[in-house]
Image (tube, rainbow, N blue to C red; front, side, top):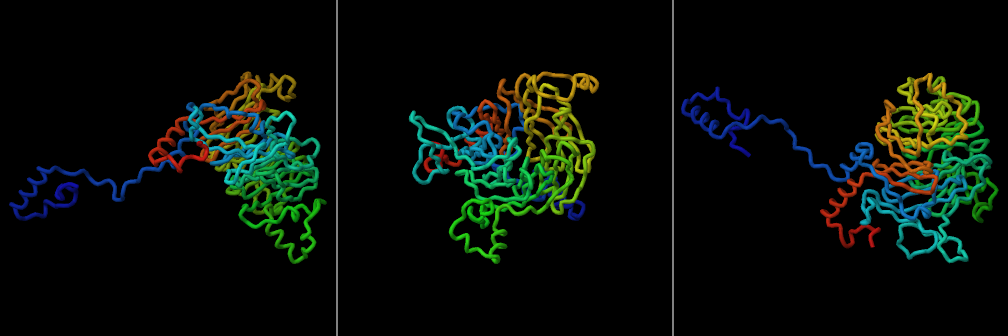
Length: 495
């Protein structure tokens, strides 16, 4: 780029013997100047593409810029929800009637404005009218009412719920947008499709109804807890793998089988078991003295965490089912694992949120006022932040802690006038931001998309609220315009 003599190390003045050449070199260096020393010997990094930049700009990075957006026509969203999963193009919502729950699969596109002030595109799953081929999802036909109005009755999973079990803990949604439910009277675990609520497979291993379950972040492992005090670990196979038919999977439950099912013989049984989506149980974990009320698993850590009313939190290995650690004195009613190996527990009797290492060392503890209770928790994908849904407690709620206990611990009794979503630093458990909802909007479920750019909240008054930074969608639009986003390249949402 510059004259070669000006670069560092090109010319060694001390080795020039000829005085005329030496003077010429010095004059040329003085005339052209000297180029600064070279700092890099490799090419400069290329500018990051927009898709990679969006991964860095999450709701946790700029929480004060996050704003709420209510989804239109909430009566068509299958709410209130017990479980939500948001992918890059679809939204699966399971209502509160699990295990005999209604299931809806909506179409949405985050961080893309709809031209009407909403920074995302959303298309409700239709349950009344059918459309022509090529649609995104299967359209469901509702019952024809005499009034002639559209009835948004989503397909319901056929199940026989066990008495006394109605909880979001018995529902999980896989990466393939399929639903796994527990709480059945036949003690089974069922794999259900999201495009018709059909039972794809039934697995049994417990001797009592399943009371809680959880999927690993990669959807490769499922862990279930039961009234029989046992925790089972199951292996989940991807949907692309061969699988048994519904008749084969349900033949043991007493339901009618297909005509071809009587041709099966002993030699074909191993093949059927190998083709099942839910394999196992691969581990049977014991150690609890009562009903298991919460459990979770992380395949990368290789750890299963579980808790019950009558025993401490237990940590077991996924590979062998051996006891790794008993968190002495830690009673929990909700437990989850972070990618960094932090165990988060919530005790509703003491209103305390605690974090421990896998080795059982306590990291931090936060005390919450008696006027609120944690309904759900969600850990960010980087394991640095924690989202909790706080609901105000009613006056009739039975809480073991007393006001004197709070005063002795130096805890300030603050009233929580309305439901809130709190952003906490996972290491210190300090709240660094709060999203307040309206009174009566108790939080039933939380979900964060993979990029951590959108937070979805289901409320008890049948509202679906999306919290996001609208600036992210503007950057997406700018990029689309640069790429010639028009004509056939337009979003399928746009008409």
